[in-house]
Length: 196
Ligand code: S3P
Image: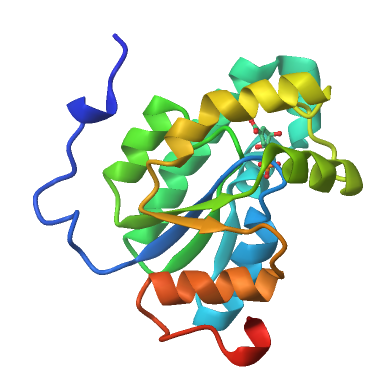
């Protein structure tokens, strides 16, 4: 049976709990890993990239999983890795970056909603995301042609917009984006002059 996000409610008290973990969501090229690393450094919280966890669990790269087992198998591994990672949130603070397809899947959105995490959408235009992905040498199985990339982004965007905070990354340095997240979380008053 397909579960909708409304079907799975967070246990009483969890929704208003203090921030335990920050989860950066957004499309490929949004800068989730770079910003996550910088944010973790600033807050003194460990940074975890969900894609790295998937690769460690499966003992092969994401590209290899897609190539030899297909996307469905990758999604299964991604969901299991997220479930395990969220157990760690119960024990301490974390900054987490999830792959571009993770948060837009209902089963993962429900896990996130049911956890002590605060989701942050790192936004940019499809043009900018495509340019960043082309400039970056990382192998991305779902960055094939531009038209498909744009369609996938448009189909996922409504889900990303459900994140608690929305940060526009266009033309901003990683440090500026990390600083804006700190402000959104109430952990800092305003970005410093150098970060503007
Ligand atoms: C994916 C994005 C990738 C990675 C996998 C699938 C997606 O992560 O999880 O290739 O579905 O958009 P990044 O968003 O970090 O590139």
